[in-house]
Amino acid sequence: MRAFVAAPSRFGMRCLIALVLAMPGVVYAQDGALRGVVADSTGAPIVGADVGIVSLHKLTRTDDHGRFSFEKIPVGAVEVSVRRLGYEPQKLQATVSNTLELSFHVTLVPQAAVLDALDVSAKRRHVAIEGFHQRRVLGIGTYVTREEIEARNANVPSDMLRTMSGVQIVRTRSGFGLRFASASSGRRDCPPTLWIDGQRAPGIEIDELPINDIEGIELYRGTATTPPQFTYGSGAQCGTVVVWTRTPGGP
Image 1 (cartoon, rainbow, N blue to C red):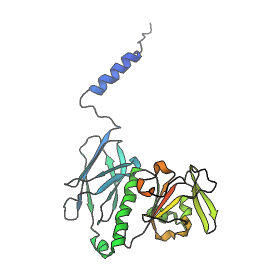
Image 2: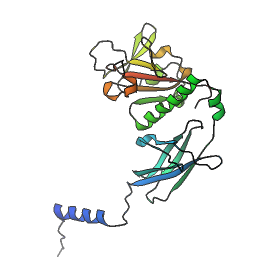
Image 3: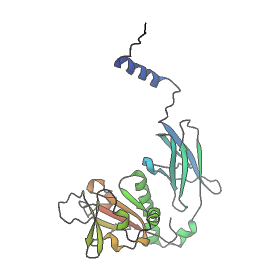
Image 4: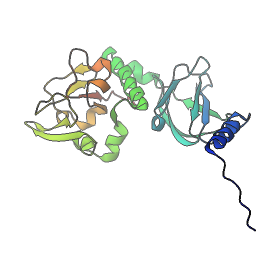
């Protein structure tokens, strides 16, 4: 005679899951942590360094001891970006562990001589570019980095944007320009507001900017997603494009 085992009821299954979750010492593969220290070449801790995991839209800063920590994130390999004004930025591969014991050490190389050579306006732009990298990690908009421009070997900025979702490249009097398909203005031709190095640049199309002068591009499709500093006094119904130019010797 064949024996039959009754399947647990839904209530019984929920109780079983709750019991397992309550067991002390149980570690789940989907939950891990990444902890580490950022220091300079002498071993001194670097305070206030931005540490980001772009793929997870996670961003944190080092504390007074140069330490950082990401908790409750998926285990496995991730790319970690580390930036601090005055130091060469770094991208490193790390492994998120569920043992909570991983010590990840990052050493940044100073670039103070480069910053000292810049004038006041260039230094301000250099600081503002750090905001670009912070927003990119958080995934607020869509971004194009200098590395991506060089990898694509683009001739004009629109070459980098043609395949992006929601972006339309249109012919203009000066060549080509960018429009957002999701723009809420209702106008037939609705050019987005363009900002260059933190200043509005009305009447300029994206392809009027030399591709070799661009450090990064930010794209925001409407008012709701545009950071406040790029909406004041301009509106963003047609979307916003923010361009950061390269600084001499900049990252």
